[in-house]
Length: 442
Image (cartoon, rainbow, N blue to C red):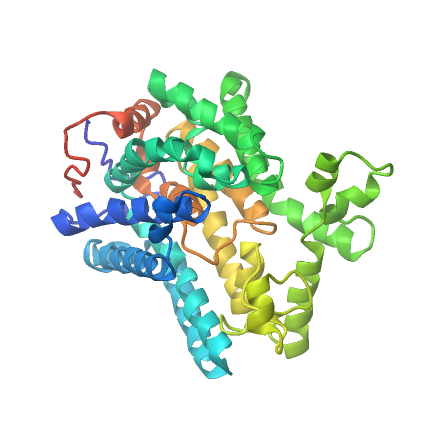
């Protein structure tokens, strides 16, 4: 593969690149950890007894701790110090998260709040993955291992899985669906079939179905690229960031609750239609907001140790754990978790990652493919009000922050259409018998 380490981005800032080769230990460990994360998730949703020993709480915690540790090592040791202030948002966010976690230590009032702190705090540091996946060599190798090792295993155990979770396991595909024309011929068919599988196999996974449909819609946008100007991508980005505010105003005014579309449908529909339109989020919004208002924690948050107060939507384990306190450590929408744990301050900083990443991809990119990815990242912020759960550092969160990292990366954005095409093809290229070839960091 030709060296695509182009050194300058459109706004003249220095590139977010490494300064030396990564040690061989990290070169092997990083893709392996992410593969293990994917296998753990597969085992979690499979009825195959042979996979059950893989899915343990210790394996989940250890793999998450290793991934975050390796990411911080790469961030601190293998990036030039003069490049660190390029995006000060990360430093500010990590400082605020540290303060919230420290407050959480003093907010612990028992075993379950201590467990919530230990579980939730690491997930707040997921944005550190941006420093890892901004490097094209690392991203290429991780995706290569995932496609060549995990996908065959997925098909091997596919019929032992709950169909509702197919789409969750195949989340890294979402990034490549809009880039389908860049893939080798064989993999175009594989990715397209799996994308259709994500949409058609089960109507129960509403969130994953919609994300796959949006990715396929962006592929359709590419097909009409000759009719679209750059202003189209910019308008789409602005619309996606404005839509939640519009729906919030309509909801607070009692005009229209977008989360309860089914109640406006009139005549009852089929069970599938009812399932797709069922409102499972309004109560979560109400409880998170009322908990923060009650404790006066709107600005600073209730800390990762406290979660939010609830009287609804508790699993059997949570009922047993939080029966007396009636608290829930986390909820499904990622942005509500950020608000509950770190307040408006943390929510503003977290939103800044999506805003800045999509801006750089759409306004500061040399190729149209990154513009499509920028629109998809903006959509993922909108969808973060409803889903994209961050209670675990799983393959869904890894693939999301891989996309955000690519939008931040000056090297990805500096590539031409042809160079990015070559990079995508290299993911599927059979380079050697070694599944973990050398990763060079200029």
